[in-house]
Structure formats: C-alpha cells, structure tokens
Image (tube, rainbow, N blue to C red; front, side):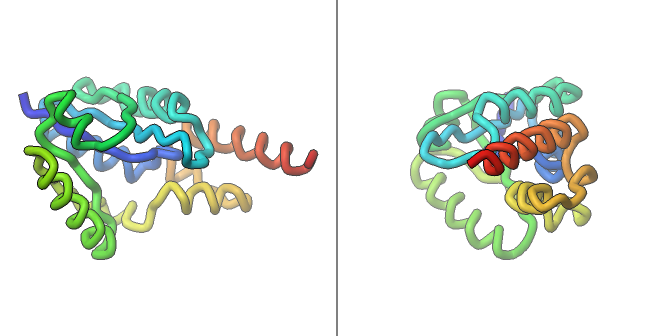
Amino acid sequence: MRRAVCPGSFDPVTNGHLDVVGRASSLFDEVVVAVGVNASKNRLFSAEERMEMLREVCADLPNVRVAGFTGLLTTFCAEQGIQAIVKGLRAVSDFEYELQMAQMNASLTDVETVFVPTSPEYSFLASSLVKEVATFGGDVSSLVPASVHARLTERLAEVAARRAQA
C-alpha cells in the first residue's frame, strides 16, 4: 500500500490545502493529513478543532484520514508506515524552503517528498493571509470551505469580544 502524508498546521484549512489533499488522494492508496501539534505556537484553533474541521471537509475522500503529530514528521512517517510526504508549492520561494526540508527529511529516514504545484486559483492562498483578511472584515468565504468559514467567523468574533473587554 502506498501511503503519503500531507502535513501542516491548517490554521485554518483552506481550499488550497484541500486541492493538494484531493490530488494526493488520487495518487496514493492512503493519505494522512497530519496536523502539527505544537503547544508553544499560538494558534487561532486548537489542534483538535483543526483536526475536526479537516475530518469534516475531507469526509468525501474515502482514502484520507486525519491525525495529529508532535515532534519530527519523519518519526511520524516511520511509525505510520508512510513512504511519501506531499507538499504543495505555490511559488519559487516555497520550493527553495521545501527542497531544503525534503533533503533534511531524506537524510533522517527513507521517505520521499513529492511536490505538487498548487492550482493557479490558489497560488496566493495561505492560512495566515486568510486570518488576517478575515480579522479586518474581508470576505474570505471563497477561500475556505463553508463549514470552516462559519467557524472562522465565530472564532474571530469571540477574539474581538475578548479584546473589547480588555
């Protein structure tokens, strides 16, 4: 069985992420969407919330499952019997960083990295940009799945209310 992992923070998951996951699911027998769990990073959504959103939006992909991981991705791959890491590339700058990471990962374990260029309509898309635009009232509904948009809108309203009380 050919297994691959699509790792990331997915804070929040975007249509660009789903494009890469969907395309990976057609190339591999099983795809694990691996959510990095790093307690020291300040995220808008908890790891469990991010995994829940991913499970919802990947439900129509029968060979995709969602899992969290801590530590090295290569350790997670070895523990899960995963042979490939799938990374979406938006621009040349992504390639420079991801190539270095792929070479480091290959030096640590027997795992290949597969680069998937993003579809042109998502080439500018990043979770950080989605959060920033949404925070200032911009419409990001076409950039994230509807269920994620609802949660994002709700969470940003909660954050704004807390700031107003402070």
